[in-house]
Length: 239
Ligand SMILES: C[S@@+](CC[C@H](N)C(=O)[O-])C[C@H]1O[C@@H](n2cnc3c(N)ncnc32)[C@H](O)[C@@H]1O
Image (cartoon, rainbow, N blue to C red; front, side):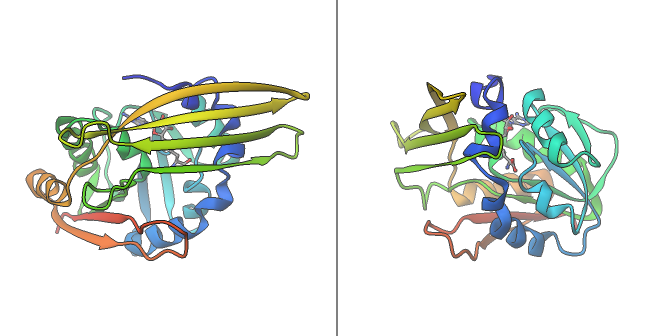
């Protein structure tokens, strides 16, 4: 599987491109669905920007494909266990009260990959536990969009980005996001362009794959004050 530059050599810019403060509200909503759990495994935990909020309430274990993103997460979550692994195949040999998969699930570009990630969540969930998945969109609510952002760091570095998401072929299971990054360090600006392919599935596909894995599935619409379409959080309960 591709490790994008965004999560490779550009990972040290993650905290400026997608600041942890931006995750407060969504992490709080996720916490309402994880309520009652003590141990939580996060798959695709990235720079740990959800984890830095969720760890106040849960005992977290973090897994990501990209070593460089794990390194960023360790800087702000040094007390948490970090493991390198692919959410389609990783097996830690133990179970958790809950498994949480945020936007990283978008990198499952085929139904088979999504099925494998759900299976990974299932085998790591206790008999009375649950798994929560948060795709950026479902096929029903997807809309092409552009976004921009970035921030200035205390270390003198600054980053700005533009993202442009669209669906070149509405009959398949993928969409495309083109990113343009401007990265400023020591008064020098570097421009980087990178294309990410991500998965997009109908709500019924999600519910069916969760059921197929053995979960009792539910879809919960996010409550958010952010200026965007609320996401659909998919919850699978084992019992
Ligand atoms: C948008 S970032 C996640 C950011 C994260 N929500 C945070 O709080 O910082 C997406 C992450 O998905 C990870 N990823 C992509 N494919 C993966 C896979 N197959 N298994 C595990 N992680 C994966 C990438 O390495 C990247 O760190």
